Image 1 (cartoon, rainbow, N blue to C red):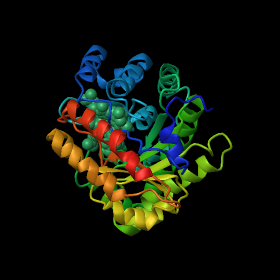
Image 2: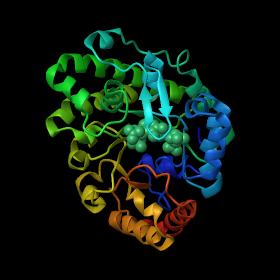
Image 3: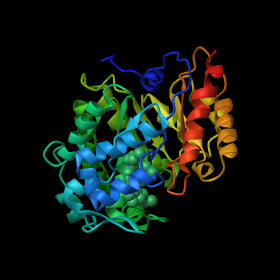
Amino acid sequence: MNDMKNDLYLRTLRGEKVERTPIWVMRQAGRYLPEYRAVRKQAGDFLTLCKTPELACEVTMQPIDRFGLDAAILFSDILTIPDAMGLELVLEEGVGPVFNKPVRSEADINKLTVPDAEDDLGYVMDAVRVIRKELDGRVPLIGFTGSPWTLASYMVEGSGSKEFRRIKGLMFESPQAAHTLLQVVTDSVITYLKAQVAAGAQSLMVFDTWGGMLSTANYQTFSLSYMQQIVSAIKSDAATKDIPIVLFTKGGGQWLEMMADTGCDGLGLDWTVDITNAKARVGDRVVLQGNMDPVVMNTGTTQVQDNAMQVLEGYGQHQAGDKGHIFNLGHGIQPFAQPDNMKALVDTVQGQSSKFHA
Ligand code: 1CP
């Protein structure tokens, strides 16, 4: 197990005392990198890239090779599960992900079944296996999923959304049907994450990108309770109980205590959260991951260095009882980011953070 050359990220998630702050970046493989765009072009389209393990491996490795980040994240997408459920994902240029067969009725919901992780999503597991082999212990590999609420939002809306008219309509008008949908998605997520771990994923992250669109009561009922099921399932299975799991609800800064109550190992923070305040609230219970504003990466190197230091200083000195900090952005890096800024960011965090671990 412990053949890692750089296991700083995993040691941090286990709450161990570490020599400096590890860094990885949400969406670290992607459109801001010219070498990603070249492989994407070679693949022809995004889904082919995801479904070709050698190419998925190649783009996973690109930011590791170029910047020396402390963790790799599987190149895939959260929408693989609904695709495997038969919704037919297409990525439309300039539009984003779209489903040809969205979920629009209770009859559609009742037809959904849990995809088999190896038969229907074997390409994801193959990618995990190929990437682990290629990484050869350089850094740990993060597996991931969308949260049930976030996946259900795309499934019912049929694409990205700003107002979430359809999924919220379902939630308010037919809560039982919404729960049926969320349960089949949750069961699918649990099977999928366990299979990723069996294939070689060394930590797990749940992206609840749209949980922050809910009222507090509805967040608890329609998003958090299903993430709770996921954490409980991972922590109660001998094969996965030692795999750290991080929850990230974008816009969830006011709910950190109840998120920590799930028993997860870490919480992702978006950039609106004051990390000093988050540490005071839950820093003795969970590792905090975040949270520089991703737009800083589209500006100048000085701004990147200054803002990275502000986040490190915001978490402050690591003292006994603090679970720890993983540096990240508060949301995914954007296509407009300057690759040179990623280098500046990694150099700043890796070069300057040891003084906070004295
Ligand atoms: O080449 C392209 O044009 C494809 C763009 C792209 C990429 C690079 C999509 C389509 N997905 C991905 C990869 C991806 N998506 C990764 C792995 C790469 C990495 O992190 O290095 C991950 C973890 C995701 C996760 C993801 N997909 C989320 C959750 C995280 C977040 O950013 O909030 C979400 C919401 C998606 C849906 C999705 N897939 C793709 C796009 C453009 C979107 C967002 C659509 C929207 O805004 O609603």
